[in-house]
Image: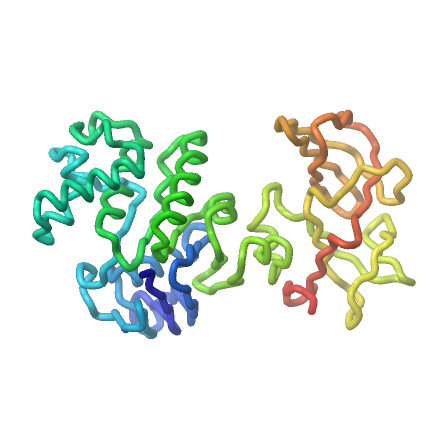
Amino acid sequence: MASSLEICGINKRFGKGDKSVEVLQKVDIHVEPGEFLILVGPSGCGKSTLLSIIAGLAEPTEGEIRIAGKNVVGMAPRDRDIAMVFQSYALYPTLSVADNIGFALEMRKMPKAERKKRIDEVAAMLQIGHLLDRRPSQLSGGQRQRVAMGRALARQPQLFLFDEPLSNLDAKLRVEMRAEIKRLHQASGITSVYVTHDQVEAMTLGSRIAVMKGGVVQQLGTPDEIYNRPANTYVATFIGSPTMNLLRGAQTDGQFGVPGALLDLSAPQGGSEWLLGVRPEHLELQDGAAWRGEVSVVEPTGPDTYVMVDTSAGSVTLRTHAQTRVQPGDRVGLSVAPAHAHWFDVRTESRAA
């Protein structure tokens, strides 16, 4: 049975007095049983510190961590019934794959026959049954990460914690292991918290995502909510690649004016100046458009082509189909699909109500 996780009013400060630094500020997140929560943000945003507090490797300055309804602050990591998968694998080099997977089970005095059965089950799930007699030094990076996941999985904990487990892998292997982690979560149903700075991992793995900046959760929501209704310009530009385009302008006679052009868009009522956000896939090349610019860079990626255009309102990036035939130096017209316009307050940078 999967357990819930409640992060209640967590604050964390390092140092004392005037020299103290607050790295987490009033973090409140309720993780449902069986949910896969992603903590995402740049280096220094507090995501790894929060994971350490959940694990018991650090103590909060204020607040509670409740696992299955029980406050575990002050409880030793070994008593929290959690399992962690680290970026560094943290395998015992002198032990075989089988012994690495079964190490925690042996420490719990699980009978040998039962331990072997569990190791074999986990190895089959991770497709590493043929590697059980090898040592970590004889394995590839992806195989080592599978062993590290197997060691965590064998314990059948209340909670899985992942600390940037794919950072050391090459691009192809990262994609494979992402799918493997998602499949394992679906099979095990164990509540999981996953730390990453990679927004692609966040979008593909999480049932919900907490986007963090400066120790504060900027937005908590499903991948669809985070991508299609970002709470502020920080979330809007952090999630999505290429990043969302932001244009400053003002509403004038039923049209939204940006430097050098009037766009056929209606900004929200309640203000004259706004930041208009447009995802690259919602910008289109249009021959007769009033808003024009010069192509500066063309980046073919295979299925798509990214086109960067210098306009009087600033440089923008659009994602278009692979067959697009534009070259640097071409003059092009641009249009924005009204249904896909995002509006943000110029002063607060928060999403318009």
